Length: 195
Image (tube, rainbow, N blue to C red; front, side, top):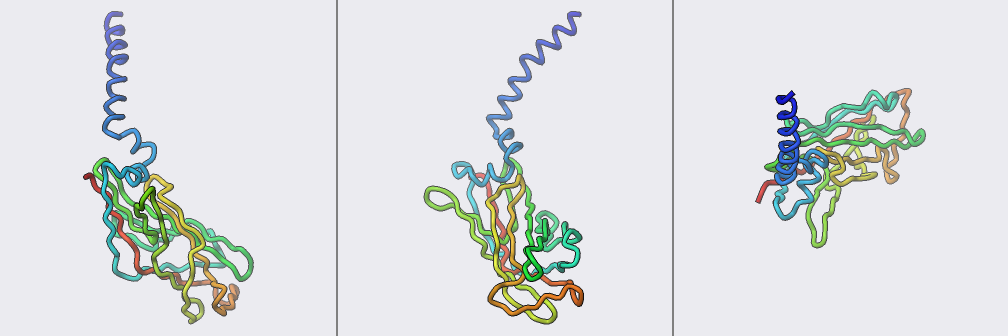
């Protein structure tokens, strides 16, 4: 009986101490908010941006949008950009959404994205800076962003692209050729580190 009481007292004293230590070190915020907590913390972390050289492509099957989920556009072993969704708006309009995944810990975070996240006076901004092109049935054309996000996920962000731009004459015929190739260049490496 005394052993149980001693264990209960140790837990009642030890648990608040452990929670307090986790709070002070920032581990609790990191656990709840992930990379976003580091990106928002301008007092303790600095940000460096570096361009990523290379051309990165993925094939999208318009006849089966769900089959594209998880296809990888970029993977360097620590960072990924992959297809999260393909939406058919109508017979001639499609959108593809990409999700990014980086790494983070108490010492900092790294992320590769088509979006540039940066600090500006009074807050933050994010702009799609990658160059996006598509190839369909031999035609190569520029495609445009349909949306971007901040670092809304624990380990990254997301962005979308219209697959068939309004300023390009492209006739999509899924029965003849359902495959479109998406190519991105000018990706950006974000590095947050402790000051």
